[in-house]
Image (cartoon, rainbow, N blue to C red):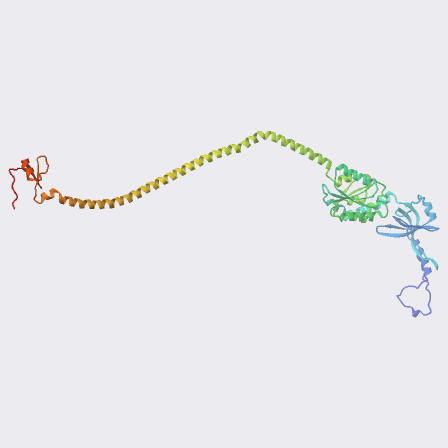
Length: 446
């Protein structure tokens, strides 16, 4: 401003901060316009949103992930840019040249700020590559490229999540690849747009939805090829950060071999085609594994049959072994039984013999005791009889002074008549005998 101030009736009545002014707002707005237009002219790159047209100019916002700037371009300048019809549309990546501008407005018009574009062109590969490279360096410096690659991918997942367009060749190619692998698991589909300004947040939401399902073991993000501008949704910073922080491994199959997007860098595996993605999602070739398993089974069967044939004689011999051993043990058992029976009989016989001998000894002793008592009784009786007999023996009578008259033949002579008749008799005394001649009978004296 030129420093000219509006005078007041009473300078002492001024209040507020001690600043220059106050100035007339119209003149200040004009000076502000001059100041904006003196700013350096620059190139901006971003995504067109909210495109609109008036009779004299086109207006829109140029956005990226960090901010937005309102822009305007005169229709004459837009026509000079030579863009194809409809090229300046929502979602288009453009590079504009110009600088900040300010419209002061007026009594019936509202003021506005805008970036006044003097030239516009569609963003080329070089422009996008510069932005992509800057973002790639930033994410790599933060260590986001390694997080997914540290996750363990299952060799044979049961459920695979797939984010792709509902109607597209990538979907068919992926299914064909899984079919060739012989995989018979479950595919959880999450369809999302893969090319427009709304694609990146929709893709990120679809990936997060699949990762929230505990049965999903791997996620494939795929679409067909195209220019870098067509694939730019897969370079979105928010999408890439979402992928890097997931607990589920993400397999990227965006574009063709020559295409390179930022999601390839943060994903666990980057594949060139959907077919390659099918191989990465199912590392085990089920067809080959089944064939190998069948060959192994056949080989095992042949080995088993060969082993059985080779070992059959030995097995038969071994099979007879238990029977022979059983017979041998049965014979040994029978022999032991006979020996035990014989030993038992011998033992019983010995015990019976011992008992008989013991009984004989006992009985003998008892008999002897009984016989001894009987003998003693008999001996006593005999002694008594002997005493009585001896009392009647002639010898005892002879000892008392008597003599026994015997004939010559030794017959006793019991009467005088016999003595006379014998004529000659023997008189036996206790200490011997003498002969005598009988002369006559002498009568008994009265």
